[in-house]
Amino acid sequence: MDKDEGQSKANIIMVTDGPAIPNPRERRLINAWSIALTGAILSLLLLCYAGPSSYREALLFLPDGILLTFKLTALAICCAVPLGLLTGLGRISRNRCVNLIASTYVEVIRGIPLLVQVFYIYFALSQFLRIQGVPAAVIAVSICYGAYMGEVFRAGILAIPKGQTEAARSLGFNRFQTMFYVVLPQAWRTILPPVGNECIAMLKDTALVSVIGMPDMMQRARSFASQSYAYFEAYTVVALVYLIITLLLSKIVSVIEARLNYYDRRK
Amino acid sequence: MFRRLLLSLATVMLLCSPAAAAEKFVVAGDCNFPPFEYLNDKKEPIGYSMDYITEVAKRAGFEVELRNVAWDGIFAGLAAGNYDILASTTTITPERQKTFDFSTPYYGLTQAVIMPKGKTIKSLAELKGKTVGSQIGITGVFVLRKANVGAIIREYDDVGLAIADLAAGRIDAVICDDPVAKYYANKRKDFEGKLNVAYQTGDKEYVGFCLKKGRKDLLDRINKAVEEIKKDGTEAKMMEKWMGSSK
Image (cartoon, rainbow over all chains, first blue to last red; front, side):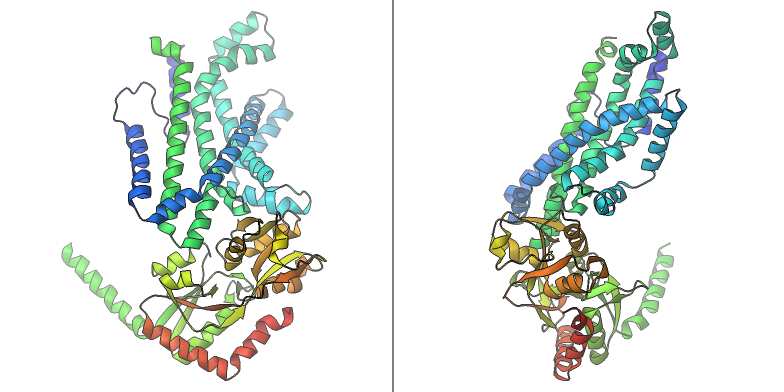
């Protein structure tokens, strides 16, 4: 069983994109993660304190944008994770109707670029529905990532050996109980790293909502660049800030992953 | 290997030299800004600025290639040398003059506020607490930010998106150059009867063709042609052609 699980896990991690989650068992001081983080922080500090004043101005222009980026990401995670779970369950459902709905949703959404979805929800639907900026951005991002996460949940659930389900069923659990008390708690360990990855990717993709006039981090940088003509400075600063945030988040995901996997560690 | 490289380099240089002799300059404009520069049905850049620079080129004796580029980063592209001349309704401001050279102005405009039909204001101060849309990095944004009236400014990729959002009722006003405001409020069928120009600032701004610093010879030739076009009445004709019907 252990071998099975290890293998399926490797498969799942292979198919995700997004930043590499640092390996929690990596004990060495110098690794890709620490080099990237110290490098990013040092260059940001160096540029802001020793570089031309426009770097400092660019950084000071960002804070409310950073807040909005976090707000959008947090709201979108809250919507996308349950949506992903539902979609994942729908995709493995035996009910043909539910299965078709979930599968079609995944197929359709995964085939449309997020940028197009943002425009569609904000500008195209505005003739019938007047959705304000923040809700529109959250809806677009959650619908898009719900589909991606659905696949992650599906793969994670399918990775749990069938024996677990059979054992639970023979003990008298119904299908619902089997899923929620036996399969999902175990699947969660394999699902978490790729879901964490998707959340980090989501944070990066919120940069797209600057096209609907949302003053997120990216829009603040563009705005600063357009009034100061300091394009290099503005985009360097915003790239470094994004990098620092995603590196920190990927560390958090790896810590949570390590805590969930403490049985593995003991071996 | 090295010899082959040298040979191909020489060929490229040979091929390039006749093109350089014909003197062709690339003109860039953000073609989302009617009636100054926008795309016609055939995806060709048209508009007042485009007509103007073509006329300038004819009189100054060079050829132009009109190119549609995004406004966001348009100055960076000029600085990088991706194109030679900006004909994109660039207002001459002291900040921009620090980095770029401008020709003699070819149009004078003011900032206009568009609001839903029937609403008017008497000063920018009345925009306090209102959400005002505009395009990233156009002078309308700078004017409103400088006026510091407490309006919430939302910046879009192009002014058309801001106006679409205004028509959808999600923002209260849009600020942009007055010919553009009049074009959208009075000439565009899709916004007919929905919008009007609510206010116009008194301060005149002047727009010029924008060049990288250090191209004095080209700038002088452009300026000379602009003077001619103003004097012989061609400018007035072009204004009537592009702005006349949306007044």
